Length: 454
Ligand SMILES: Cc1cc2nc3c(=O)[nH]c(=O)nc-3n(C[C@H](O)[C@H](O)[C@H](O)COP(=O)(O)OP(=O)(O)OC[C@H]3O[C@@H](n4cnc5c(N)ncnc54)[C@H](O)[C@@H]3O)c2cc1C
Image 1 (cartoon, rainbow, N blue to C red):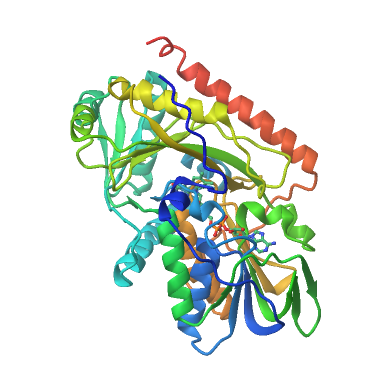
Image 2 (cartoon, rainbow, N blue to C red):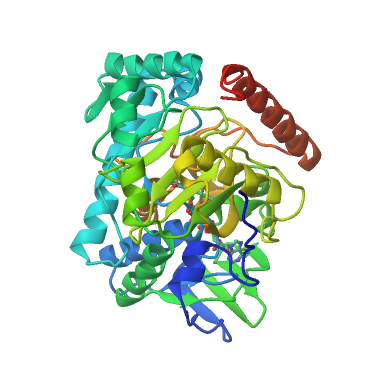
C-alpha cells in the first residue's frame, strides 16, 4: 500500500525537519578583510574552517553560506560514513590502476576513523553509530559481480574488516528472501547529517570562525592584492579562498574553470514511521548495520536511532535547472517505498513519514578532486558523488594543509591537483548524464530480469 505524505513546505530533508527550530546566524552586512574566505557551509567548508583555525588560532576566517548551514547535501544525505570512493572500485581500477585504488581506499579508511574520532573527541551530538555496512546483492548475476569485487579487495589487500557471506546466512540475519550473498564490512558507521553539520558549525565558531548565513556570493574578482567577494549586503577581501560548493559549483560566479568541473545529479530518499519492536523482530537486522546494494543505480538504506528506516537511491536524475531549486520526484519516492516493501513484505503496511532529495556532485571522470583554481590562492573541492560524508571531513584537513602551504601525506593523495576533465557544454553534460542513466538502468533491468514478479 502506498502512502502519500509529502515533504513539508520549506523543509529540505527529514533530518533538517526533525532537527526542530534552528536559528541561523545573521547575514553579512559589512565589509570584511580576512585571511581565508570559504564559500559554502557544508561538511567541506566547516571542517576546513575548523582545521585551519586549529593551526592558526589568530587567523580571520569567514564562511559565507547562501542559505543555512547544511542546506546542501550535508544536511540531506543518508549519513553513511563509508570507505566507498568514486562510482565503482572496478571503474577506479580500470581508469586509475591498482596503486591509486589502494591509496584511495587507505585515504577513505583514514577518513572514516577521522570522522569518528572528531565526533567522539569533541562530544558532537550526531547520533553516530559504528555499526558497519552490508554490501548486498539480489540476483545471481549481482552476486557473481559482488564476489569479484570482494576478490579484488582481497587481491589488493584492502579487505580488512570484510567477510563474504552466503545467502543462507544473510537471510538468517536479515529475514529477507530477496537477499543473495553479501559482504559484511566492519569498521564503518552512520550519523545524523543535519545534527553533524550544525555541530560542526559550533566547533568552527568556537575556534573563531565567522559564519554568515543567507549570504550568497554573487561575484568573485581576482586582483594581485586580494580576492574580492561580493554578497548582497557586504564585501569580503580575502588572501585565500576555498570554494566548498560541491554540487552547486556550476552556479558559482566568475570562475568558468570551476563551472565546468562537475554536474549535479539528484538522488531521493524516504523515511518510514518508527517501527514497533515486533516489526523490528520480524526483519532481524539486530546489529542495525547500514546497507548498500551493488546495482548500478544503487539503493542505500539504514536505521535511524529512533527506530525508522531510511531508504534512498535506485535512480538518479540530472536536471537542467540550478540545484538550489528543489526538484520533487514522486516517481523516485514511490520507487524507494516499493523497493523497501519488496525487500520486506513484512513492512507492507508501514507508513512513509517523509520524502526528500538532494544533489550529489559528479565529475566526468568519476572520482573526486581537490585543486587550485588559476593560482594557489583559490582551492576547490568537489565530485564526491554519494560518498562524501567521511571524505569531506578528511578533505577539510587536507585543504587546511594546502592553505598552510604545507606538503603532507594528505596533500600527496592523488586526487589533489589531479588533471580533471572539464564539461564545457551544459547541453552535452545534460545529454551525457541522461544517456548514462538509461544505460545503467538497462544494466540493472538485465541483471534483475529473473527477479521481477517474484
Ligand atoms: C540525498 C543524498 C544522499 C547522500 N548520502 C550519502 C551517504 O550516505 N554517505 C556519503 O558518504 N555521502 C552521501 N552523500 C554525499 C554527501 O552528502 C556530500 O558529498 C557532502 O555532504 C558534500 O559536502 P559539501 O560540504 O562539499 O557540499 P554541500 O553540503 O552541498 O555544501 C555546499 C554549500 O555551498 C552553498 N553554496 C553554493 N553556492 C553558494 C554561493 N554562491 N554562495 C554561498 N554559498 C553557496 C550551498 O548552499 C551549500 O550549503 C549524499 C548526498 C545526497 C544529496
